[in-house]
Image 1 (cartoon, one colour):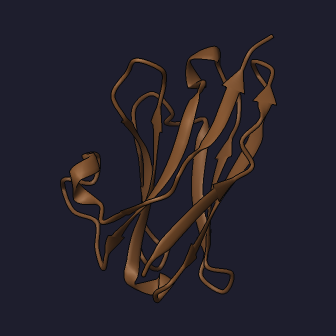
Image 2 (cartoon, one colour):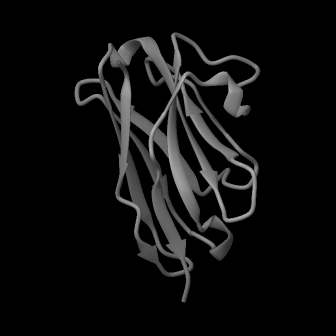
Length: 126
């Protein structure tokens, strides 16, 4: 079955940058729209970004727009989230998610996705 695995989460200072990755296995990576969500302690899981199957369309949550960039490499079955100008409020567990074939107008809802990774911790603090 499809499995997702995040990596790259770490401690970073405010204003810094980091990149988290999500590897896909168990299916055809090119058949899935991919997304990033995050969840801070005591809060609901929040949409971060989504990318279409071929990577030609990207959409972002308001809280990260202009600072984060989602991308994917179909040859490597890997999705990335480049995080720049990070803020303490970016601290969360970051999850990757997959939706079979296409994203939709519900792309920002966690219920729109079929598969989830276990998450990687990102901590932004001075």
